[in-house]
Length: 199
Length: 424
Image 1 (cartoon, rainbow over the protein chains, first blue to last red):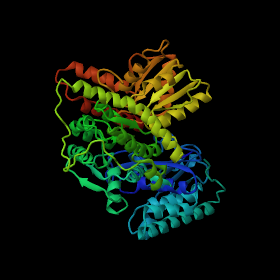
Image 2 (tube, rainbow over the protein chains, first blue to last red; image 1 turned 135 degrees about the horizontal axis):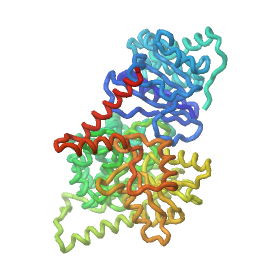
Image 3 (cartoon, rainbow over the protein chains, first blue to last red; image 1 turned 180 degrees about the vertical axis):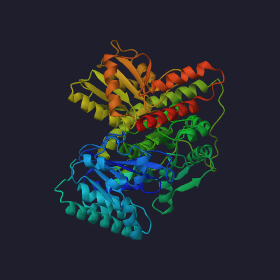
């Protein structure tokens, strides 16, 4: 089983990100479960959502406490929430920022993970270009597909289409694609080898 | 059709397949997405011959459902928590009048203190009202139970409440197989009411009954529930043969055959318990689970058979009868009462007001039940330090103020302290 925790703020599409990931995994014949952190969500308040992906029925209903992958949609959360709690030593880390981990002051966290498992992605900037608003969720799941190789980009594309039919879907797919390419190019530049995630 | 879908939306699609003719509901978290979904289906024309009635309160929602059902319509509503309490008088009336309404309860805690999260307090508050109460373990079962609920309700002319864990099921996106219309139609015939208000043949429903017959009316309601035990099993069997899936029934056993310890629970927590049991089995602990699907009627005989061979029973439930303990544990105790070598019963209350029930905590609980059994009711993961301080604080002064606020202040102070320590 592969467990993902998405951190962000109300209004950033945190819950939708987890749901789209589950839809992408489902398209590939896998079992997937997505659920929010069950709060009275308010715009701007810290929000958490979870996604589990497995090859068998997922029965577990507890929140994800030891994620295999963390997706952080808002880097200002580091000061407010213990975002990294429980992240597995073999885990993946995707942070929405145009800065690198050193500039964000979390180089030590990224360094503890295997090479090629941590990446910052300027998802809000990418979204602003394609979607017209800084909504980073589609771009980040595009980046997730590239970094973990747990779902194919094509499945991500379908999941976005299902969540946002029509033009909004098209522009979000474009954002996801650019983020996907960004991660692949960054991996290439860094010369990191194969690090695909397994269930 | 297999779908990756939000639980509420899946339930809405399942309920629509039952062709309800009147739907009335008032929004309340965490049930809202279900009736919203049904509203969409009525609006876009997927659900025809159905009147979606907006009402001004939960009391009106169930009252309208009562009127609609008495007029011969297949009626549906949904609510949760305080909403259920607000319709309480109508809840008793629907059962007393024998109207086959189906209601979804998106299980949620009851205030005060106000809390929007999941537990089973609301279901327990109406356990004596005369409704059948079924509990879903997964969103697949939630869909299947609604289809079975209409069938059971209408065969008996009794209202059925389908309980689904708020947020944990209603807001979870997971794989659900939505049946097709033809199979549901073959399983669920059109509603043929036992009693109906018809202007052409005037009759009254809801007579005043005095001491001369009230006992008999109540006896018959109880008798009908005992008949429902057989019907629930039969309907689940037929559902299996038509839909190819085990859903519903009275109870479901998991790894109980050679189990010394058997856990009894209801609803979605059974999934987490099964994972815990698998891990404990790996370590050699002979432990199993009985999932209770039908809470009312209470399947005492089925439960007794399933539990008779065990040494220890651990009841894990999301409700507290304040001043008594776990209400489900009391019912399970009744089922075991006359066994010659009754197993030891251990009662645990967990997941109140949305506190996550963790696998790690369940591991500790199940081991403790065998090795170091507790007296009375255990509150799983109780913050003993905070409770102790509050008892001490409120004992010191008469005007000690409200408990809930005092606890929150204490937790905030602890958090500040921890943060300062972290900085230092």
